[in-house]
Structures are given as C-alpha cells and as structure tokens.
Length: 108
Image (cartoon, rainbow, N blue to C red; front, side, top):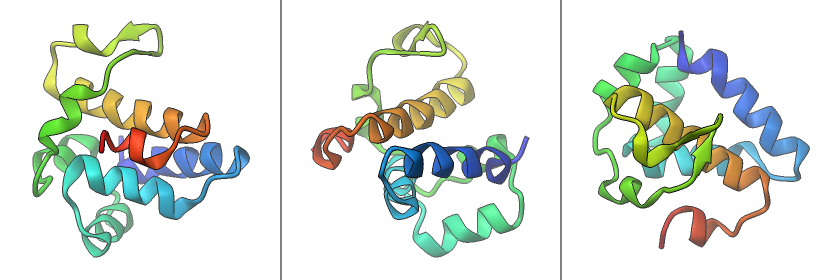
C-alpha cells in the first residue's frame, strides 16, 4: 500500500476539522525527518509504507513519547516496528484533527 493512497485521507480528515495539508506535512516530516521535497517525491512515486519508513532520513527519537490508543490498539503494545511507526503517524494526524496544539503534537 502506498503512502499516497492513505495520505489523501489524512489531509481530508485534517481539512474537515479546520486544519491544513501543511500541518499534515509538518507532523509527517517531524516523525520521519523527510524534507518537504523528499516527502513530495515519496508521494509522487507512490512509495510503499515499508519503503517510506525504511528510507526515512531520521525517525524522530521522541516518537516513543506518542502514547494512547489508535484503531483500538494501544500504541505501546505494538511490537512490529513498521506497524508501530504507521500507527504513530495515524495518531499524529488524529491529534491534529482533534484540534490539539502543534507544540503538543510534536512533543515540544
């Protein structure tokens, strides 16, 4: 499954709640270390989630501070690294859509 195929839903969810695509990009870049150009290229190339996270320039070490439940599963209990990173991204977008302040989303 490509990141681009899900990314459009992230943006739609955020925009429905008054947030922006730029904010979705910001949380994605924070998590992965991609530049905006690298992120745009990955979306354009229809990069799979596996490759997207495997090639991430600098997965944020603070991503482990993301706690809670997503899709009925507690993030802290997900053992598979790819699934955990994917769910971190889901959680960040959820927090964005719920109106949480960007400083708190980015664990600043």
